Structures are given as C-alpha cells and as structure tokens.
Length: 134
Image (cartoon, rainbow, N blue to C red):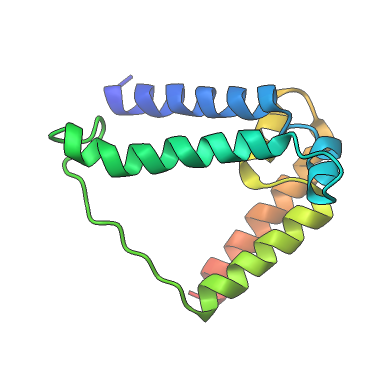
C-alpha cells in the first residue's frame, strides 16, 4: 500500500470516528439539531470548521509540499447561482433525511443499514448532476 492511500485511509478513519463519536451517525440527533432542539452538534461542526480553516491556511506556510501531493495549489472560490442552488438542494436533502454524505458513511460504519437508501439517492443525485448538468 502506498503512503498516499495509507494517509487517505487514516484520514477517513479519523473523520468517520469523529462523526460517529460526536453523534452525527444518529439521524435523530441530526434532525433534533436541525430543528434547533439540541445544539450539541454545534460544537462538533464548529470545531471541525475551525480545524479545517487552520489547516488549509497554515499547512502551505509550514510545509514545503503536501503529504500526498506534488504542490499546494491556490484555492478557487466560485459563488454563483449553481453554487447557491446546489447548496440549497444539499440543505433540503440534509434536513429531510437527517444525513449528509460524511455522516451517512459514518452511520453505515456503525451498522445503520437503512441509511443505504440515503447513500444510494446521494450517488444517484451526483450521477444525474454530472451526466446532465455539467
């Protein structure tokens, strides 16, 4: 196994463990958070956003090259109607189902087999978007 895949595998394990440990693998907890009844996930979301912001801004200044890439590339940001429509669709889907892609995979990892319906529809939506709207 190459170093690249090992780093990706370990990152995925840490990500999934963090989501499951924080309660994101439970649709009931996610839905109660989205209904503003239980704001416990706010700490999980806030801390993950903080760690990500620090990492993506600090890593290029500290490291000479990425752990698994050739070079750091400038981040491109595009805020347009497609981005806003996609964010709205994602938000509605998250609110209706109580799962986002990361938490769905973590939920599957803890044995929540019915979540496969949501994962299937996520892949179907991504396929349709890529096939007909790219």
